[in-house]
Length: 242
Image (cartoon, rainbow, N blue to C red; front, side, top):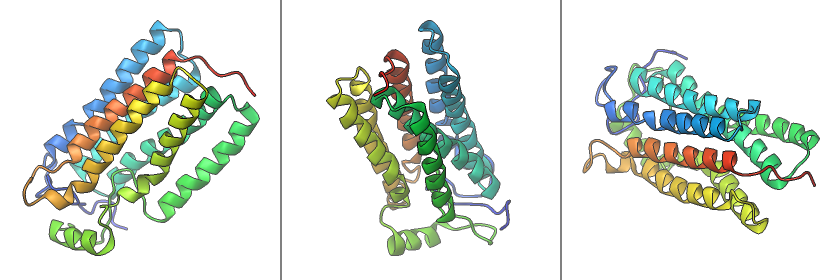
């Protein structure tokens, strides 16, 4: 694999330049703002435990990693994008299971092993946080990717986020059934994620009529989603182990 081969899979990118995706790059500030708000609220409420701090740090790394991918746009920056995303997803799932469902720590360890396995499978089958695809060629053209999208996936790679969709739906149902205070936060985050995932899916398909694409809105809305998840987690009590 050529770690420095240019990856061009978004409407906004029209060349290999660093600032070829300004909206896709700068919209990652959404994750930074989510992390800052989470940190401020965690300090205010005395919820600066290790796990919460790690989640906030991971949200920051998501913004940084995605910024790197949408500026350098190559294989190594794709990893900088994907690793924080799936690490955040795996850790948040486990924390939510513990704090909402009241699952004991020992079972969380088993869950961690399962989540690591799932992430490994996602990597093995080429799934990544940015929907990136690598090539031995210097640049992957949008025309080629449009053809691949039509032939292989009308979802534009968004099917890789099915586990995240299922997890949010499960937590929304679980928290509502238990009457947990985090329920409205998760419900709002789930709704926003559905909208953002739809916009991510439409990005390449709308290039001809909307050259800027919709990927930058995916970033902004996902930052909002993470902010809501943080606020719900920080403001809610931890469920008693069952």
